[in-house]
Length: 483
Image 1 (cartoon, one colour):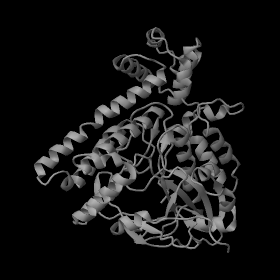
Image 2: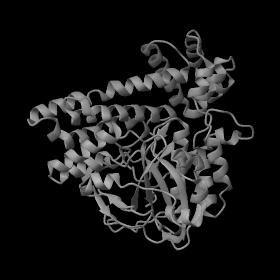
Image 3: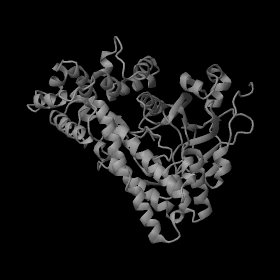
Image 4: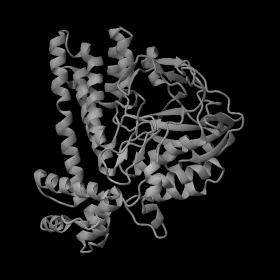
C-alpha cells in the first residue's frame, strides 16, 4: 500500500495523557467509501483524490495511518439525563489525531463506529450506515445554516454487519471538530482528584479555543465565562431554526461552542415548545423549549467541576461561578432577539421585536403551524402576499392585526430571506434518504445534501424538500441514538 499522504499531530494526547488511552480501530473487512465531503477536505488542506483511493479509504477507517500517528480513545465523564457517570469516554470512537488546516487551526480527525475501546461498557463499539449518514446530513446542514458544528468528512461502509434490532450494514463516520473537549472532559479531570490534571485540561482548552481567557485575572474563570457565552449563542441559534438536539448531556456540550452528536436530533415540524422526538427522552427533559434551561444547568455542572481553580476559598469560588453563570440568560436573550429581529426583517428596539415575536409564536402554537415554512412565508407577506402565512396559521383572527403592527415597522424581505431557510433536514426526507442508503441506493441522500447545502436559496424542482410531513408521519415520529 502506498504511503499515507497526510500528517497527523497528537496534540491532545501529548497535552492530556490522563484523558487519552492509546488504541487502534478494529479492522474493516471490506471498506467502501459511501460519501466524501470534498469541500471540507479542501478547507482542511486534504487531497480528495487521495481520500478516494484505496490508501485513503484505509486511512478513513483507521487501518493505515501516517507515520507517527498516535490514535487514542478519549476519557470523559458526564451527567446523562441528570445522573452523573464518572467514566464514560469514547466507547466506539477514536481520535486519530489533529490536522493542521491551511488557516493555521487544528482540526480533530475522529472516527465513530470504529470498534470497542476500554470505555465501551459492554457495547460492540460499532455503528450502522443509517445513523452515521444521519450525522453527515445533519452536521453539514447545520454548517450551511451558519451554526457552529462539528462536521463530517466521510462515511465509509465497513463490510461488517451490525446487530441492533436486526442486522444492519456497518459504517464508520469520519468527524472533524475544533476539538472534542467537552464539559464531561472537565468533569472527568475533576474526578481524578488531581488538581494538576484539572488545570491541564483548562489550560489546554484556553490555548486551543479561548486564548483571550489567558489574560483574565483568573484564567479558569475567563474560560468558564467564554464557554457560557459560546453555549448561549449556540443554543439561541438552535432555537431560531427549530433544531432539537435530543440528548443534551454534559458529555455532549463542547467547550469550543460547536454542536456535537447528531444521534436522536430532529427539526421541528409543527411548532410546539414541548416537542420531543428522541425515543429515550421519555420525560421530555430535552424538549425543544427546554434547551436553554438545560444548557444553563449543564454549565452549572461545568462550574462545579472548575471551582478549585476559581479561588482557594470555596465560598468565594462559588460566588465567582454564580456571577459568571448569571451572564447566560441575558446573553442567550440578546442572541435570540438579534436573530428574531433578522427573521422578522426589522430594525427596531428589543422590546418591539420580542412583543411581535411572542405574539407570532402564540399563533404558531395555536395553529400547530410548520415552523420553517411559516417564517419563510413572512417574506412573501413583506412583499404584499399574505396567502402563505394566512394558510399556515389557519385564519387566526389575531393575524390581521399582527400583520398591520409588523408592516408599520417596515420589514425588509431581503433580510428575512437571508435569515429564514427554505430547506432544513425535514424528518421524513431524512428517514427516506437513510432507508434508501441502507438498502444501497445513495441517490436520495445525494439530492438531499445538495438541496440542504444552500438552505436560503430556492431551487427549481426542489419544492418537496420545503414541504412538511403529513400528520400521520409527524404524530408517530421518533429518533434513536443508534447504539
